[in-house]
Length: 107
Image (cartoon, rainbow, N blue to C red; front, side):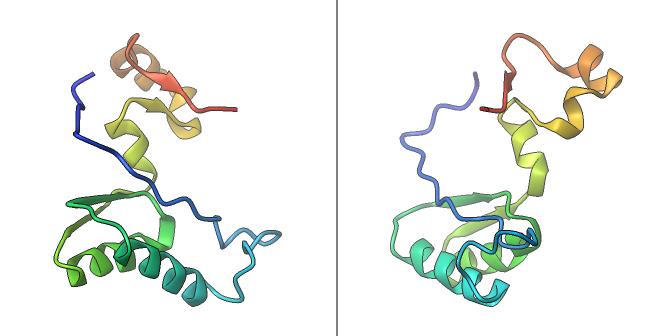
């Protein structure tokens, strides 16, 4: 409820490291190059990144573009009150942190 930016944009890309689906990319470097090209084509101030092993290289790409990149991994969900699988069933999270403002992941 606290987050009210002027606009939010997202770059969607395949999780290229799952064995069965490399999203049409021959390597993770090819995937990175595609994402870096798309990052350079949009206007942004801060990139909030939840991209596994590509997170730090993508944050570095944001810096090369003269912007800010924050790689938070899966914890990016927590920042926005999204109940990810790793927290949903944790008793501490259920009783201490979750409230009516949290949402579940889409199907």
